[in-house]
Length: 131
Image 1 (cartoon, rainbow, N blue to C red):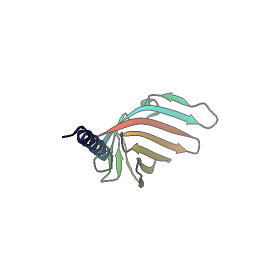
Image 2 (image 1 turned 60 degrees about the vertical axis):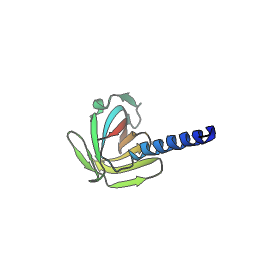
Image 3 (image 1 turned 120 degrees about the vertical axis):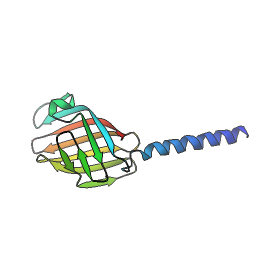
């Protein structure tokens, strides 16, 4: 094989493996997600950053795409809307009189989740892996 052909084959294989990695977070598999950092913001006050459990967020949760549910250790919530783009999957719903959005990066599995009501917002950062 010529060096140029070897290089092209290597590039093709690397691109194929990268595409395979992205398919992990395409909504076809149930995910286990870990909350890593949380921010609590109230209107007119400085935001506070800390560990997710400090604001009552679960350390781990599962996303069951097939049943349209996010499952925590104490609570299960329905996913009311889903929007898939090339880069991310957005899940939306309501829970405990708050609206929430869960934005999942389709390439890395990292997420940002927001929960809001009339007086403030919580932002949670984390990462997911397939079960």
